[in-house]
Length: 376
Image (cartoon, rainbow, N blue to C red; front, side):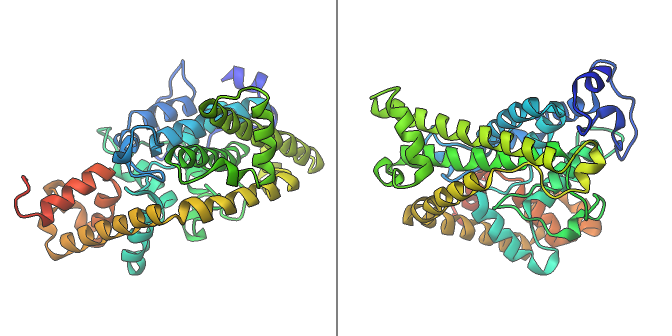
């Protein structure tokens, strides 16, 4: 589209120069290819299921806590803000952000860990590659092809989703320039995911009372934001929201300024320059160190809290028992999955079925399989 070329910087990804889709289709007059990708993702079954998939706290524990869907929306919002500031493609950034967790299992990282262990000798399980599998193969919405038939650029952004929690194996990158850096837009989503993840976990941790403000103020970054927030309100509940806003704002602003400086230092002028450079979108060294201190506290006092660990181990047992039950008799899967076994293998079909479950469905299925008086 002409507007993209007139407004976006020279190293942005343009929909008019996309590497295209697996199956060629007639593109829209009114929407760019990346906007159509965004819409296809939002209307997918897998995207809707994110509403009932765990972030840290299992979905039924309370209405307040984040789910994969609310997390995804937050990542998309941060990503678009950063893309606009850097004058790169907001539509591509948003599409990647909305799809980045679409292949996640029920019960968060505990579910992923359990499925990877079960699939270790059968190709493993990693949620970035599963997200790509969902959009390329598992979604069924179009008569002429499987999957959502997204553009190469969105698919690349999905598989090259790197954070401290995500590090996909290079074997999954063979179709996506494995020795090159991702687009600026994909790199933005990577850091936006970390910003959203860490800060909403602080919010949920404080709400659940597993984290305490008096402990967090020992961390320099949190203390800075706490001091600023105290000047705005004395209300105990509102100050929590102010602190989280300050944290998110501080991290976004730092990442934008540091990234602009990095782009200038590396003389980035084209998309090829981006791909031939090291990661450009990142915090300053000072913010990186402050974030590391914050993440260390979250790991120790939230993710390793005995209540969270109990939930995680219970989730792993759910996944393991479901998997082994289907292994014993594959006919317990819905019949439409049978046709996939010959081409995909029994274990991968079981893995796909479980990965697509919501927390609630996995719990209900567990009851149907193991509780004798549960209604089928």
